[in-house]
Picture 1 (cartoon, rainbow, N blue to C red):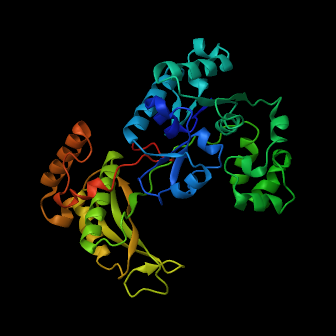
Picture 2 (cartoon, helix red, strand yellow; picture 1 turned 180 degrees about the vertical axis):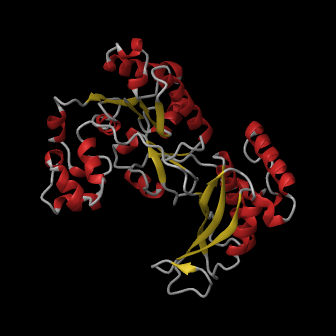
Picture 3 (cartoon, rainbow, N blue to C red; picture 1 turned 90 degrees about the vertical axis):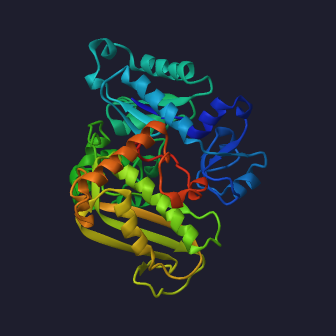
Length: 413
């Protein structure tokens, strides 16, 4: 069973503020005209407002659109409430993102498995209203595997419930296009078209050898053949490869010193992410996007194709994990950023390893002390709130660089 909260952030804001119910709202990460919409209510979507659209552009389409700055604490609360509800039906449940979850009933109790799945779906819908609030709505999809359940959950939004079985799958696929299938974007659509597959039904009927050898040229072809027929191939947990943060600067006239305080803020957020997953890193990368830069730069870093993207990386011989170590490297790398007006900065750690050890050989014999201090700061920040303790030079940056909730990952929730 796939559960998808409808227009999650916007719906949560309408639940929290009754006067917003029935009105077009757009959730943004910053209160400026040029910020992008991260979620739109269904009232706003009816005017053509879409995710990624600039707030100013969206307000031209929908003059009554209300821009609301995102409030991560609310969304995190709803995320955990949905997890609690899902856990009552099976020990095997997974949050795929902050607003989507999957329940695997194969490991449920006999009492749960004996119930009608659609009855359970209706019960979950009602529990959302009873335990979170009356404005909460979700789509429910039921099928033999995760892929088809997600497809079912997207058929009739908002507040729909659909079941895909071997008896109705062909009928449902007749109403869809290839790009309606989760995981098939324009590139994969082109691959399928090249062998005469233009519809989901043709995809369903395709020979597995053709998919493996010609279309996808890998085991992915076999997986698609199985996925479309209800076999489970997506119950896979992937290890963390990188972690980082980025930030679009609030003013194009910031000094380099002011930009560095914001970069330091991103470093602290990245360090917390890294340690929360029990990881250390060997690599650090920083980047900057510039306003209207053309041609090649004169720095030691590398430029993107359009000439307005600069980045530089460093791979250390030993792993590290503390904010101090990450900042030492990031600060040194950022000294090479070319002259010009910067509009966006970012940092990421890579070459991740399990465990928090061996870092302080970079700093002499301070290993035990640095580990204790880092652990204590993380514990205090976790108990009393993020940035209860932070670097002094990031004090002002915290007003601008705020914690945001990602849609695509639940690792840090």
